[in-house]
Image (tube, rainbow, N blue to C red):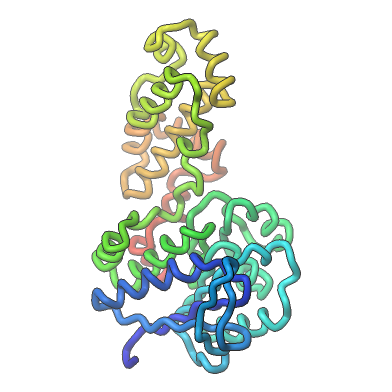
Length: 324
């Protein structure tokens, strides 16, 4: 296809289906909206491959048959972090990524890139369950354990499974602009796109659902308006109960103190505001963390970086003009 951006999705037996179909669907929709993507499936041996759920996908072509590709996306599989990756798979992946202008991975596909040395000296992420293993096995990689996707130069890695859709949307946004990416996201009824620095877990979804309906309502109120007064005294008065009893209820139902849960929720709100392009001062104010200095202290304690560094590191593809 003349003038098309050639994308190879690298697959193999045992590959996770959604790691393949998610990015492929995004690129196909982008093509429908006038962005010329020519997507091919590449595998170590060609022919069909059997996915982890038993379905076959194909036909695929070998790395040599694929020739030069603009972008290569390495899909993941459950076995990659826990088994020795076979040499045939690595050899084919090495060939197909060698001349690509851009290389990406979905989920545990990062382990293939790490094994090839592509991630040495770079920041990267993978499925939250395997970030520790990636860091231990490949110490030259700076693993970002709680990011949806990470762009470092021409290499982009994403978190687990559905994050491949976010990754593909970021590639479309980088290539063709926000408008095209937004159309694709709307067509697929997904977010455009979850920012790379958004946590793989939101505070709300990672919190056990309280059996106590009063505590549940308090949590909803904090998430809905993080900048409101959510001190222990104010929350206790809202129930009403004593501060001591509220602290006990919180510990039993949520597993932490009210202050820690509120701070983590406010941090998440500040992260979102920064990635939307707001200033540090505004993010501090609207998240409820107060001053710039308070925001910096929380970021350093929880994330190990400053708010400005966080925004620069996880800015959207379109804002990351230095990566072009």
